[in-house]
Image: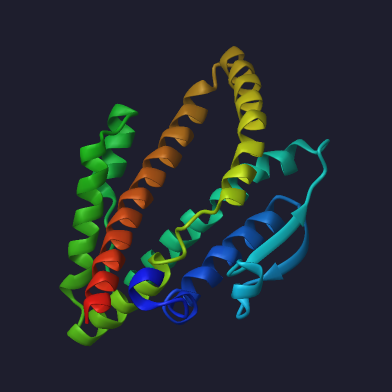
Length: 224
């Protein structure tokens, strides 16, 4: 975006995405009991610090719940941007989402293929534009570009935060899985895990489509 539209485009075009990105970090930090010391949703003087936005938070290394939270705090922008785009489809385009194929596959097979998830994404995108007016579609595309161009961009610090939560999650899941296995309750946990992974992949496909759309439009604008 910077190469095609200049430095200011990070604020003018990508400002909304940055705000949603940082809001995601902040919301998940609060949810997992972290002490949020500073929130800067959009840094207008980013050239001085090199940061478009930031969220500073502290946690107790002895608090398992707070340690687990690091994983989701780091990935929060990914889920927040996808949620924002789905809400735009629902309320701006009046889309009627259908996850029946995906849910049916999960309920019957306890597993799901990539093709089923991809089909769900395509079906929902088709339904999103079916009943919308052209100007609503245009507004949605513009907002998608503004969100996806910067919102999904995870920084090095974001991945460092994610890594801090991976090991605690592995330990907790191993212990929890062992206990539930003894009480023959593993099916409930497995079903929940499959649902979470399936819808995370669904969000990923939706994110890829949105990012590619943004890249194409930004490249075209750069030529113009």
